[in-house]
Length: 201
Length: 90
Image 1: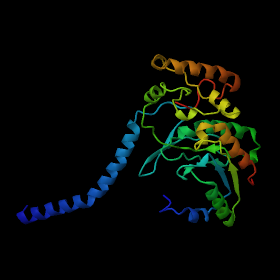
Image 2 (image 1 turned 90 degrees about the vertical axis):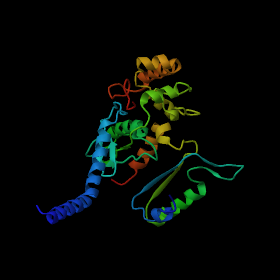
Image 3 (image 1 turned 90 degrees about the horizontal axis):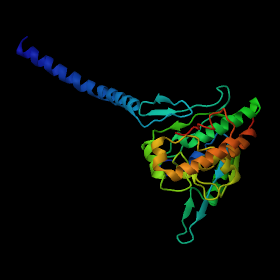
Image 4 (image 1 turned 120 degrees about the vertical axis):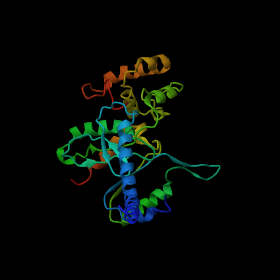
């Protein structure tokens, strides 16, 4: 190969690299997003199976409940919120949906999900210092004046049995959740995943 | 957000029936600022715009409801939602 040919080949390779770089970069971004999705260890088991769809810019996870033949109800959480916020609503909506005439059902729920940035164990620990919280470790489960319907819901919240390390860390929370579970057995029908295992982590 | 997404323009193009639940809100007596997501006056305007767009809007005032009612009181949220949904034409 002459020196002229070698220079030409090198220039062509350089140009090809320049042209391919954005494409390779985009592909790398997508691969990185997919890899990050797969490697995230912040997920915990839910009552609903989480699905994931790659929208190009983001990998979005969601859950679906209810009959596929029913009109869809799309539940979109607000800013910075996870689909977990709608978890209880999905249960209730689906249950009510089963009690309605077929032509009035609108209960297929498809919440959007965002991966929580804080592991569940840390969230629970942070809530052990507060009072009137649920086993979900969510502050919003502390209403100022519980209404009748709200109490029913709260009774149904503390479904997840606390793990050993959680019991050791949060004795007050344990007592609180024991009471909730005791009441929930009397108010929430069993067999639908609510009595012992709710949609919460 | 309202700068790049004018609410009046968006609301004027609503093409479906609307359930508008208005939760906890107040006016701070000291500063006169709104404490909440939307004021009564703004809610009234929303209803006017959607109605003018030819869509039905059901306004439900829930001043004792939390901003995220679906989290704080999911039973109430579902009750309000399904009550409205039952009245929609099949």
